[in-house]
Length: 484
Image (cartoon, rainbow, N blue to C red; front, side, top):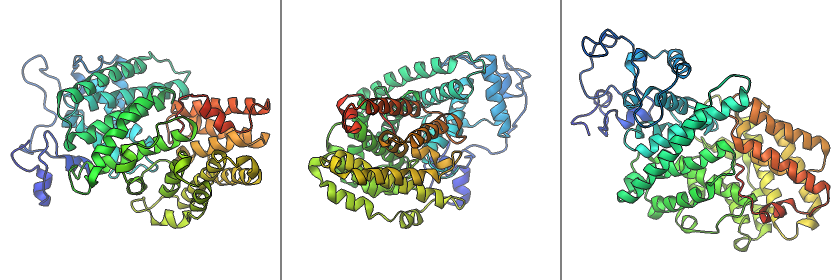
């Protein structure tokens, strides 16, 4: 911890957390922290002595492997330098938060900050993306650095595989992703076993665990996400027990990250419960106000589903705790127009019309799920068909290249799996392929391909007359799928 405030906080007369090497408050606010030493320094002078003598730019200095990931090859170095140049960043003024990383690791961290974080929210805002809070934390938590690098490398590997299959690649990103994932597992195990878990380090631990789930989603959505979800739920219960966020037991600067990570974890758990067998109510359900957490994160939650609807889906997944008729009435009574207008923190240019259509599609998909989950679903064929048509009509109004398309996967899958109409089946298939291969705002996360393949399998089974309720058949199959 620095002995005095950073220059930014001192000039603005703000309380500084004095984190080293950069103030966390500056990083969260999207500002370049000026640090704690003298401001005036030679920025681009050559080294006068030693093995770096005469070198001006940081890109001329070849840092050797540090044990985090292997040193990059020339192609990857040039690509990293090109991205730095595009940002207008002087190489000799590298962010001190990543100065201790080798060049390839800096490249992966840069990709995480600029592209992966964009995928995780509905609308990316530089100063209001809570996932970027993780960047300054990687200097304090090695396991967080490793999982950030693993996620970024897997993201790049998937991007190159599906968006640019004709471009030659060495496949190094996938190798780096797996190596960093293994390192993250070891470091996370050591962190949990070797230190006392406190409120101060639970939020970073939760972020690391949930990003293991994200890693599985980028890959295929078929991995070991269940074990990670179980660990995340225990951490969430510990963080939010007795309203610890409100009591400031978690640092205020980390609260947005804790809420965003928790909201994602809750969303994964809720939507996983619709098609897979997941554990029933736990300590998380007792200690966490699901509605309040989802409401605090609704401005940047990628799915665009009203929190009341999301909570109703969770209750429908445990039918012994709620009456299907009451849940249907609750979901149908949600005023999506009023909900969208009440969200604070959205950018001025947000497309509220598309957001209303997305929320309406989720509302109808939730009704469809409740009907299919209830014992009386066969007797409500007209209601089911009506819900499918409503979902598709709302989704059809969202353009295929829209930034909010990333939130349409689950309602598209629900409607597509249920419909028998050849036109709408083809439309749902093409819409999921648009998310996967053509939408410019999101990487082709592997779980989208998994959803498309599963939808085709459901159609084949239904056309053969195998069962009357595909949803129950999917749950009974015990396939651990995560479609969000």
